[in-house]
Image 1 (cartoon, rainbow, N blue to C red):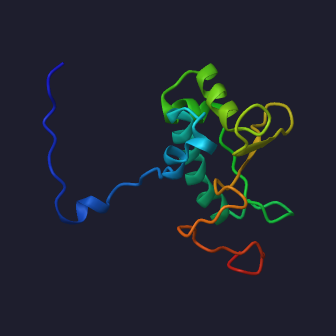
Image 2 (image 1 turned 90 degrees about the vertical axis):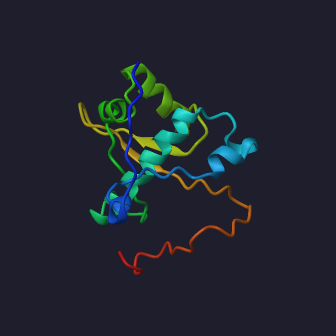
Length: 141
């Protein structure tokens, strides 16, 4: 395979792309997240990215929890994986057979499930890097 010659970023070009952010703790906290594959960690980053869009669209349930809709077909496309692989990655994250970072709520026939992406901060442990938030609906919602 021939080597591709990539150019540098110049000036403002460095800010022209969107990025998927994956929390570093998913890689460093082996006790809690060591069982997750790197692909599942990447999927979690994609799910977090969707969360900000859902919040902007006011996709919030009656308990003030933000939810997303991310059909398996879109997971397949985003991660360039097959159907079974996409399902297995989602299973790694779900609260039924996985680590518990995603809760799936099934809807009617042929409708994609609603996904609740859970906070990766382990309850009861201090984390000084976390940005304070409010669960109260009166703040910015």
